[in-house]
Amino acid sequence: MAAFIIPGCSTSFIVALLVLVCSIAGHLPLHSCQETYYDPEWKPAGGTWYGDPDGDGSDGGACGYGVLSTSPYGSSIAAGNSPLFLNGSGCGVCYEVKCNHTDLCKPTATDVVITDLCPGGAFCDGSFPHFDLSGTAISKMAISGQEEALRTVAVYDLLYRRIPCSYPGQNISFTVDSGSNPFWLSLIVKYEGGPGDIQAIQIKQAGNDSGWQAMTQNWGANWMVQSNTGSALQGPLSIRLATQLTGQVVVAADVIPAGYDPGATYESSVQF
Image 1 (cartoon, rainbow, N blue to C red):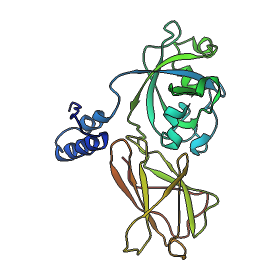
Image 2 (cartoon, helix red, strand yellow):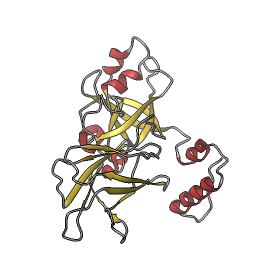
Image 3 (tube, one colour):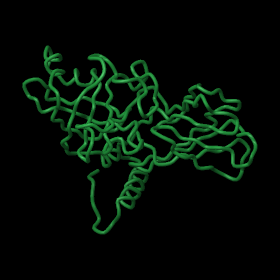
């Protein structure tokens, strides 16, 4: 299904219309609808790399994901500057990235996910998109045998485009912050497929017929809520997530148990 623009329509209206069209056209392959939202064209960006040559940059980073190399995120990640990190809204977004150094780089793209902030400095300041890539990601871009030579390049000319995220066999998960208590819940949202981003999160307590309570984005991929009744949060807790790019909504029913453990990770049964 081709993308289209209606003169005078806002982006939010167009996204809502596309969601409606995709929901009506149930006979169409899902990817036909998904591809409407993603970047068909390559765009320019700057690039650097950090960390160990075969590493994942730095564990966790400004999104708060924790250890990456042994997680579904893997080591092919990037820290994005402000136009990519978007005050944390860019956490979990996936891109194809390739470099223009034709004597060193493969012509094919490497997939990366934003897990960190590239903060300030000569390369990360400004409005021009910049990827500070992990050693693993930059090495994947190299022609076989040219990995070390590519890593010695100080600054890279990159091309990038947004793509759907894919975590086969992995559903959306929530890691409860170690400082959480029965009255205040803070958590990190992980492994969102498709758009990879989150527009809004709401939470519903067990036996609460009054509906959903909005969570607040703290930082990175961290969202929080406190009891609005003065009583402890009543689990199990259900979480409803809406994506920013596509407006899709999923409900992770009863995903956070009663008596949840600070520091524990709870995997849902849903995925975008």
